[in-house]
Every structure is written in structure tokens, then in C-alpha cells.
Image (cartoon, rainbow, N blue to C red; front, side):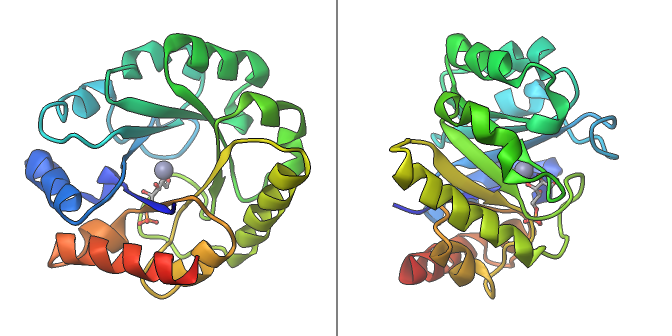
Length: 220
Ligand code: DX5
Ligand code: ZN
């Protein structure tokens, strides 16, 4: 089943609780939590305290995307009863295998992400350790960018590898997804689709969430 994970990076932070209630009303499956440190990416967003403030405001599971250096030092802070995935960047982890094991041991599903410039082969040796592979379809750091369509090839390849090697990871895409391209994204074999501005930028957020999910499901 295809899942939609709206990114709160594009939400109105002054009313975050209500905004997240809107995506839940529309049938979103996860809340995507974009954490940026101003080092790994050229922008600072928010930390675990903001994510934790949503506990009780929504029943949706958290899909945490750590765009930070030294993620091992911080990941325990993001473990909550609602935390489903914690994703780190391959480019930020010297001992990626150990970091993925650390996430699982801490009690979340382990995700790993690669930037548009990083080839898929960099994940070759950790595919068994990952519950989620997140393909960046923009250079991370900012919402509202245009999708780099070449990244869809990585999704197709990940799907082939999963079948061939009988693996279990889920495949996620992040960056520049909108109503016009979500069909292609779903067709490529994506399991979880992140949408920031396409979801929270709409006048009627629940309706936009429904529309995005419907278009994705039609093309699956
Ligand atoms: C990019 C973030 C994305 C971003 C998506 O650095 O990881 O999750 O917020 O936003 P849109 O969908 O607006 O590209
Ligand atoms: Zn993200």
C-alpha cells in the first residue's frame, strides 16, 4: 500500500498542532519530520522538542528525517512511542552499518537516505540493515524545490534489487512531489511519498492530501 508522509517543514509553525490535524483528517499515513542542523545542510529547522509537542495532537506515526551531522549523538532524543522511522544520511555517517543497528536497538525502524549526487551503490552493503531507503529527489535543505526526475531511476533499481535479493526495505522519495508528478513517482515503485509544500501549501489541506493519495493510488 502506498503511503503519504506530509512534511511539517512546510506547515505554519505558529499552529502546528492544527496543521497536523488537517493532514490526519485527509488520510495522511505518517508525519514527515525534517530535522536540519545548519551543517549537513545549509539551513536550520527544528529539533526533537518540536516533534514531541505533537504527541497527543495526532495519532500519526513520526517519520524522522535527520539531515544532521553525527546523528548517533542525537537519535535517542527522537525515540517516542509514535516514532516509526529514523532516517540518517549515508553522506553523514562514517560507520553507517553501526548507526543503522543503533537506530534499531534504540527502538525505531532504521532508514538511510542518499542525496541526488550519491549513487545507489553506496548503499550496497547495508541494504539488509535498512527498513527504509529514502531517495532524495532534491538537494536537501529547503522545501519547495523542483524535483530532479533522474532520481526516479534509483527507485526503480531499488525495487528490482529488493525482488532479486528478497529484501524487505520500503522505498521513500522526498522532494518536489506535487499533484502533477505524483503519478510518475508512484509508478516507479515508491512505497512512501513525502510532500511538503504540495500538502501544506494548499488552501484546503485535507482535500489536497486526499487528492495526492488518490492520484498516487491510481498510478501504483
Ligand atoms: C528537503 C526536505 C523535504 C522537503 C520536502 O530538505 O527533506 O522533506 O521538506 O518539501 P517539498 O515537498 O516542498 O519539496
Ligand atoms: Zn525530508
